[in-house]
Image 1 (cartoon, rainbow, N blue to C red):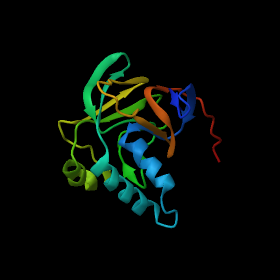
Image 2: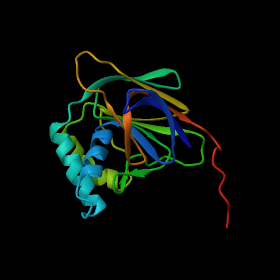
Image 3: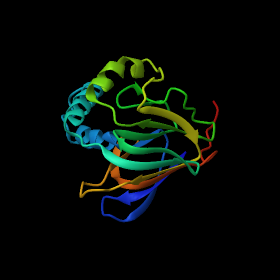
Image 4: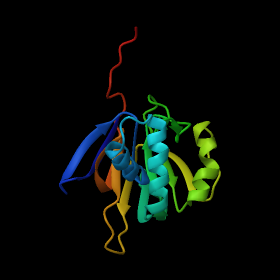
Length: 185
């Protein structure tokens, strides 16, 4: 299970748990749009529509990201994803090496990528392949810290977890190993 410490929609410190994936940046904005969108559309179409809209209008934010106490990224980012599972967003395999039971979170950093980069690699993401791009990074760890490196008066970086818009950065993602007991049938 993943645990998130963050600032909620009321600007209060909060903690929540997630099973699959949580991310800040574009993903938070996409989820806001999907949840406010036309519910009668198929999920994949809703996500493609929201992602396309967000790619056109989302302003990348500067962040500092640490993984298990080590700096891994600093700069403009499209999205920072903490994944326990592999799939999100209507079937996108954003974290192909993620395992639900390994006691680690997979960190996917989508840095200063463009809309063209996104669409060039969309088929690879759907197929579960790692993206080879100088602005895409993959890591594993137990504790991921992301701080908004605000240099302007931009809005806070949106945060979503398991498809729900819940707040914004700063964020601490932590893995809570063996927190869920599953019965074998």
